[in-house]
Image (cartoon, rainbow, N blue to C red):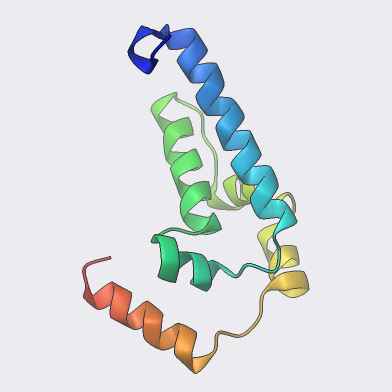
Length: 104
């Protein structure tokens, strides 16, 4: 079977499973800082939570940014920041600024 042959329900189930696995992976990898993700991939946990909130809105579901972040982080964002977020190094900040100049 190729991807084009998947029915929408199966495709949606596979996408949901992949999303859940990504979120679980990011929850486990607390050593990976959001700025590193932004510098390497152009998105971070906050982006993912924003996309989740935006998807909820398209379905008529009211979800705040803090609620969406808690879904992605597995805890309130402020708690995650206090436990795991480190100050960005000058090198990380420079890479982030360079990426943003490139139209990120």
